[in-house]
Length: 173
Image (tube, rainbow, N blue to C red; front, side):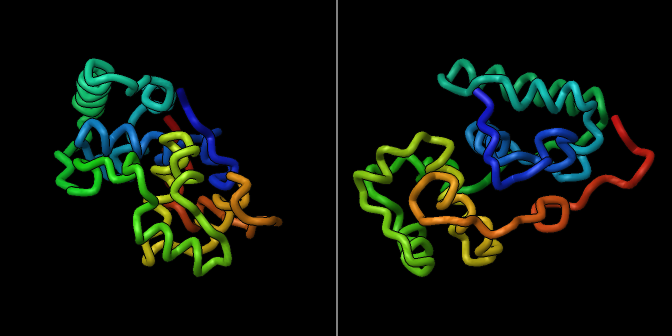
C-alpha cells in the first residue's frame, strides 16, 4: 500500500522527496538513503519503492533486496539505519508515545490511547516522526487536521521547501 498524505503536497508526482510512506518502509528495512541518492534513482524505481508492500517479514526482506538492487544499479550509497525508535517500532506501541502526546497537546488537540490505536500504522508512524520538536510544527498540525484529530483548516506546508530540496533542473530521471 502506498499512503499519500495530502499535507505532503505534490511530492507524490515527481517523487523528488522521500514520502513518509517510504520512510516507514526504509525504517522497517533498517535502511537509510540520502536525499541526493533517492533523487538519483530512476523515477520508475522510486515509484516501485512507494508501492512495494512491507506487511510481513518476507515483504521487508524483499523490500530491502529490491532497494539494494536499485541503489547498486544507480551507484547510490545505502547505509544501515541505526535508530532505536525504528528498531522498536514505537509507532506500534499500544499507548500514545509521550513525545507525540506532548506535541499534540501543545497544538490544542488530544490523542487518547484508544484514538492512537485506531489509527493505521502509517498514520501513527507519521505522528511519531512529525512530533519531533526539530520538525516544522505546521507539518504535524496539517497531519492532525488530515486525520480528523484537530479542526481545520490545515496550515499550508510547502514540501519542496520544507520537506526536502528539489533536484536541480535538468537532472530528471
